[in-house]
Length: 88
Image 1: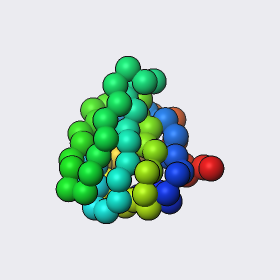
Image 2: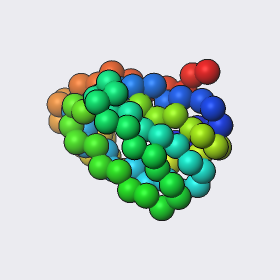
Image 3: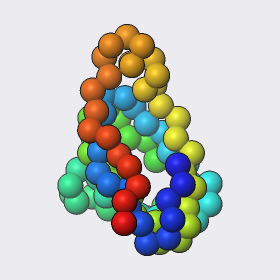
Image 4: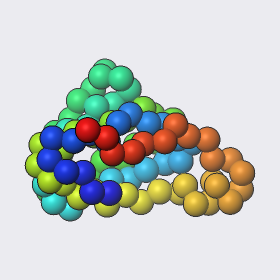
C-alpha cells in the first residue's frame, strides 16, 4: 500500500487478519476510533486482528507491506469488510 505524504488511509475493518510492515516513510495508525494511536517507523510491524477498526496517516511518502488472510476468507465466503481507500 502506498500512501502519499499528508494523506490518509481511512478507517476500515474486516473479518480478515492483517499484518503490516512499514517499508519506507513514516506514518501514524489510529486503532478503534482513536482509543489508541501509534507512530510507525521504517521496519516496524503491526498486527491488526479481525474486525479491529484502524486508519493510517502518512507523515511522509510511505509504503506499507500488508499480509492478510483476506483471499482465503473471500474464497470461503466468510469475508466481511468496510473498505479502506486513499483519500485527500
